[in-house]
Amino acid sequence: MERRFFALGAMLAMIGVAAGAFGAHALKSRLTPDMLAVFEVGVRYQLVHALALLAVAWAITRWPGRAALYAGALFIAGIVLFSGSLYLLALTGERSLSAITPFGGVAFLAGWACLAWAASRSSR
Image 1 (cartoon, rainbow, N blue to C red):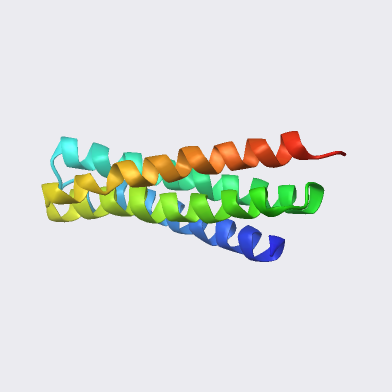
Image 2: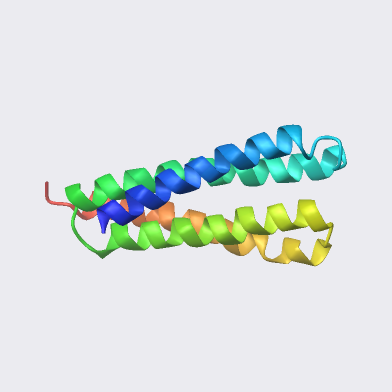
């Protein structure tokens, strides 16, 4: 499972870099400054949590148990819900999508709590 999380983290980081470049170059003249900032927040959180998935892959090998696995799943859900909703909001202007964003934020917080739990529960 650690290979899957590591590979997914690397892929999501690559996509995050590409999204950041797309926003900086292709979207700069098409979005308002406020919507470009929204897009950039989505990129930032995607990149941070893609790296967190690399940490999850390492944690799985160091501290076996379900907590690290849950952390990985929650980080993925957070990226999809938080960053995904911000990307869609910025690109479509559909304000109702902002109702999804907090669920992604909660997933991120729960993921970090699970990762902390995995480390604190370890006997190593």
